[in-house]
Image (cartoon, rainbow, N blue to C red; front, side, top):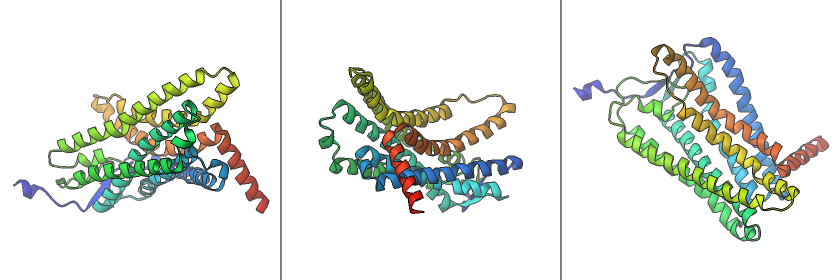
Length: 318
């Protein structure tokens, strides 16, 4: 009987803003503009870190990885969202959904690890400057970056493998813009306790540990900066890590806001909150990748100079 009630799901329907057709056109334009800014800003940042020899340092190598990651993260979901805003019936195949979940999950976990490694780089540069060339040599920072990608990919593979093996009971409507894993798990007709435990452990490893590591690193960094006798020296030291600290606060602050926000128990407000939750999740996916290159170009002197040099060279060649 139980097997008869189960059916093979070959595609999912993405609900998005189907009940708000007027909003869809507005958000299509807005998200498209933000996506173009992400591609342009992060693309320029990658180009600058490759072409400018003054930026061939561990911090900017990690920054180039972060920019590439942001492009991959948004490209794994935003084109699907944009297509959904223009399509009356928004569908995605089961395999396409699995791939999209894998990419977004992998990029998110990788970014958490990468931000932690960037904090370690700033810690060594400010707290142990004499040992910096030895500790953060190319033979050290390249494997560090590679390991962050591998760790994110392996974690995502585990989570998505557990999710796609679950049976689905006919209801294939995902109340989201994309194949968000929690929204997909709600459609299963099996016990998902293993999935919940697995994601809980992953959250501790990929969210909790990097946050703790970043927090401890910046305690040592701020302690060292405050010991610098001159105000100019303190300003210069802090300017080298202010951009990274700003990105960390925005990245983790948005996650905290999304998941620590209390849920309304009022049925009348449930629908409105559901729409707002989906929009918050959507803008989280584009806001941080869009702000990262802007923050680094405004708050990092070396990046700002390199960008100006690149623009002036382009103008000169034309």
